[in-house]
View 1 (tube, rainbow, N blue to C red):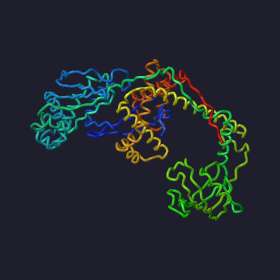
View 2: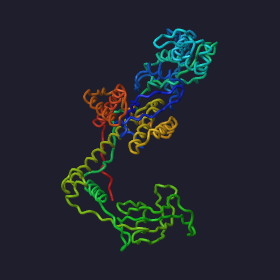
View 3: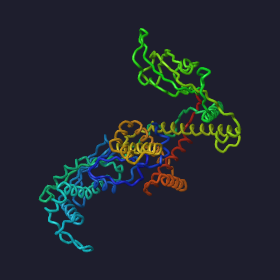
View 4: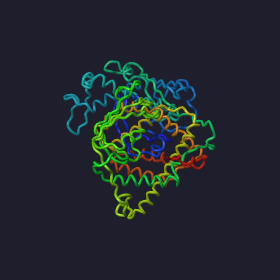
Length: 547
């Protein structure tokens, strides 16, 4: 229910590019498990991005006015003119910024000095090692050497670097951090430096759209919430689940032998060729059903692995080498919609048949069944205890989700675009990390998946789920403020230490300040969960009856 913390790895953003690099932080926060079930801000210049980060406050969903009062033009001490236009429908403010030529001249001079310090042209600014260069490069030669476009870009960046913080100062107290977007195209600002030798020719104008802290309103009494959850299991189901767990373990330790003296029996394994065609209304064979044809398919007939009604019954008794055809009608609730209610003709050939032999349940097997156990009785008792512990964990998880969903349901708030996008990037980065850990992906493959295009596609496709998480986030943060939930220092220190150990395990760099902020948010989330668990009226239904 909380907005995931931004990437704590340091990174360098490229200038003049839209960027959305997914973080690879190994920390999967408390809410990752709780909240998720399954656009990028265009900043024309690095200078604008850097300057805005200096002035924007820590992003937090705060109560207050959706936008500040309409104001007339404001002129800063440096002569920067800022016109502020409120956009309540968007929860944003538009700043129309005009940078005077006097500031542009200072920026121009700074860029010239900078290039003189970094560019070396023999015969003009070369100096002996250790000596200070004093002679400036002639402007025409400097611009030709650097390139007019690059030189002008540097001037525009310098102007943004100096003017944007002053403009943001008008709204910084109520703005969401890093939500500002320069909506004016970068090259449109080049005209300001169209004078002789790229000098200032006119004031530079650009527009900035800044999102404000959203207005948060609970449409109901959050202290009188009620939820209903289904128990994942109880004593009546624990024995059956423990027995299945034991059977699965024994199955893993079982051996297969070739069966030649009998037909297929449920529980056997077989290698089969299988095909299926649609049966026409006149009884003739129709088109092949897509995805049904399998050659050399390894089929396990035990533990309810075969879900299609009638298939196992028709396979039972078939001998190795036997071929058989039969018809089955797919159920109307079959997962694949294109075959629901379809009458199909199956043709199956059993190429090999294997009987499964299970080991005897002796104490020598106990360690393999459940590590650390010396007898089968102890192993069975440990399995039963673990099953019940999982019930408790799953019930708490379902309860937490239900409580937060109920809270989010009465939370009336306009979701800030920038927060939704950031949440999407964090969720995508967690998926990349999981893929990297499970599949041990190469850095090159990971870099391709972390491209801005891939991130944007994920955010677009998963928009509903991302917004669901953000709404939970804002609702819980508001609850924490209303109830005055305070983070305990010892609990926070333990969370930070745990996080550092995880980063060290993955050999991942992190920013200390951002890590503390991330852990603070994680502990705040736990406090919100505790409050909800203690104050929401929770009804637990018995587990679903099993066949």
